[in-house]
Length: 411
Image 1: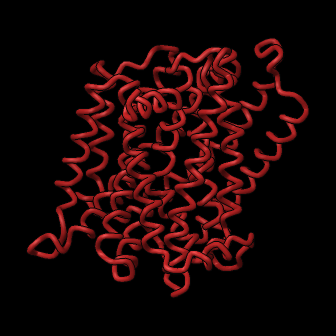
Image 2: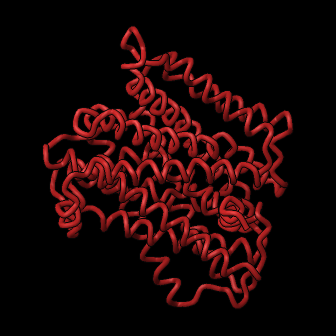
């Protein structure tokens, strides 16, 4: 068997996990991890590791529930708690993703514009409106012509490029790896925005929509009881890649910007600050990672509403219907809002994170009740150990939500 076939086979076996990585490691994650590394070195590695560990537990739990019951999260919420609760979760996620789509595309095109300034005679870089139309058009065309299995492979490609770019750039820009490794000693930083940065790093990894999407992708994959072990393997790949990529981004900032006291507020700051230090080639690799991160997030963003609505109505996802194609085009057009009307992409991303913060504890609470329903899960009903772990994670999420909301209010 050729290496290419082995890669495709692996991607197929862990497709839902790669879908989550592509969705989760976007421009918001890049900004949060870079800000943490620039401000506090590697001392917040514990927060990233903890959030990825908790994420592993939760995606296994949501995936197992779907495999055992045959119902995904939104569908089960509707059946067990009524249409009202299910629609609150559904529309909170939809609004959050609408706002996030605007912010992600704006950040990606901003980064491209900044990187391309030396390539244009005017020195202004590539026009963000044209870039948005080109990127949005490519995503729409691929979604129109692709089934879920094909989209998984596209995301696997973007995740591969993203991973290679961030890991390579971290090796290229970090001049003193020993100092970076020494900085891994856990620490709770003090500072005006320290709590908000920690909450942001954890929030970008543990958003409630991630677990809802997990249950839907498992259902789309058609996995059954015999594949519970494969589901855990898939979850390990997903959580492991999230940690490796987040660590690499943080190390890139910690090894270069942290010693100089330079700060990062958004992804474009990372490009501006790193280029003079690391050189054009190294920053080009990093930019490739940011673009791949953004595009790998936009694919799920554009198809999320059709995915959620199909799940809510207990139907198979079909992106070829007129309604779903209209939704995909609408989401692509949202990307033009900031390039055309102006605005700060970071504030747009903050607005989407607020909605995500509100939804996550509710989603976890509803699933917590469901995994204790013996009439539905039988021998897979949560035991005492699982309930204790789930309870700790839920309380931790609520605490981070409170910290995040207070931090956002005080910005």
